[in-house]
Image 1: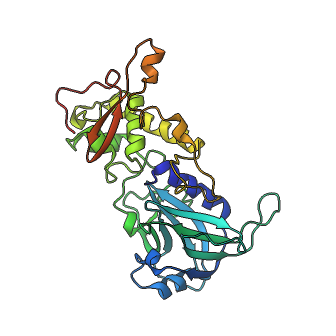
Image 2: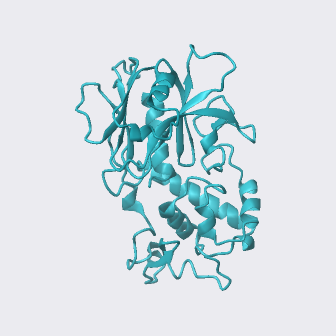
Image 3: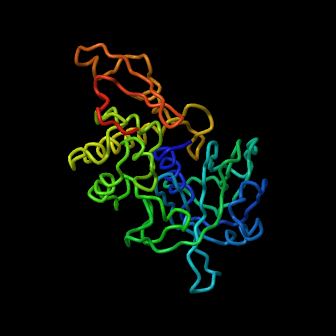
Length: 320
């Protein structure tokens, strides 16, 4: 499942290649990929044709494009085209005459545009999904509870799709508050990794980046959240932010061909992972300090946690 860095890489690609363009036509090749649009394929298409993509916004792992339609009656809610990537969803910007992908589900024809050098931009946005766990749908926008913009990439509107309103802000969001997060974290009374994976508490973090951040901050995944002091929370947030930013610089983490950027490029942060997937290999921090400690894998919530037993000792009052 793509985590925040992978979705943010896609958001930045869409902001570069799609924002500011009008959707001229829509073709739904597999209705299952718009099943979340309960009003049906015709309504999905009707809301998109003629609409201009003004902003491309992300909150946590949620991604949406704000739509402006001059033909839409005044007083109606603003709309957004939401894209849920699921396990294998891809948003690709292609030339209209490019060969269709094997698992192409939805294609949007975009108005002509050029890049900064005057070269024509590809004229089609395609949604490709091998496993059909993802999808696209049009959603109403509602006011954000805190009055700030909906997420990263929103330049004006303090609006968020109803389907994403329950998702907490992520550490890359300008409106994210460490103090708010600390207070909510302390009140949760659970294990630290379980809290980091709670998208209603802090969003965008999945199993890979939770392990990476906990290793970087030196905390065991079962550290009770109600024992954390404010500097501890700051250390965790700083570690999460650093890991996310390094992953973004590397284009995200791609373990196979299912996750790619809008131009089809894979991310290569997997080469720089310090914890995840490194069971039985030396802890790099211990090695740098002259110790020989092997990374360990432990069972956690029907998945795995990777950690260094020296750098991240298990607390006596652990809560997993």
